[in-house]
Amino acid sequence: MNLVDALRRTFTVTPAAGSGRPHRPAPQPAARPTLSGTVTDDDGEPLKGLYVKVSHRGTMVAWAETDHAGHYEIGLPAGVYEVRFSSRAYHELVDPDVPVTGPTTIDATLVPVI
Image 1 (cartoon, helix red, strand yellow):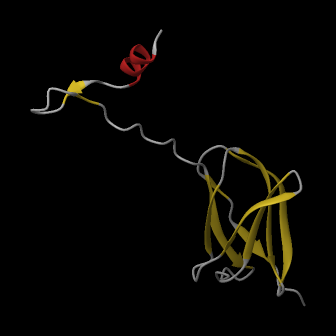
Image 2 (spheres, rainbow, N blue to C red; image 1 turned 180 degrees about the horizontal axis):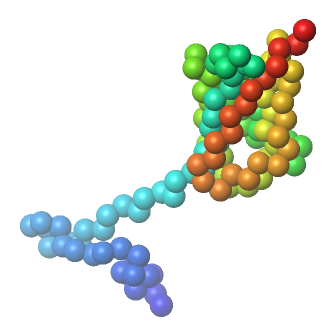
């Protein structure tokens, strides 16, 4: 199969109005998996400014800071990650094996350091 045949199988080819040339719609990029959630304290109050760090095989690959509502969102390639929630005022929480293959939600509740 040559390139033209491959393109015809991939796209619907129709003439553009009045041009006499084929019109090929642009391919849509695949949706990137996301890791998102909300971080609260043990009273259910959202934690603003908390760090969510994502590692793969011991190397940090992404991070986010929670917003005023305790929400975070991180775009990642599909894979299995360690997710670490940390702040000086709260005990760190680690989930060592989080599979991310599409939209993935991890909510966390942290306990203050006393």
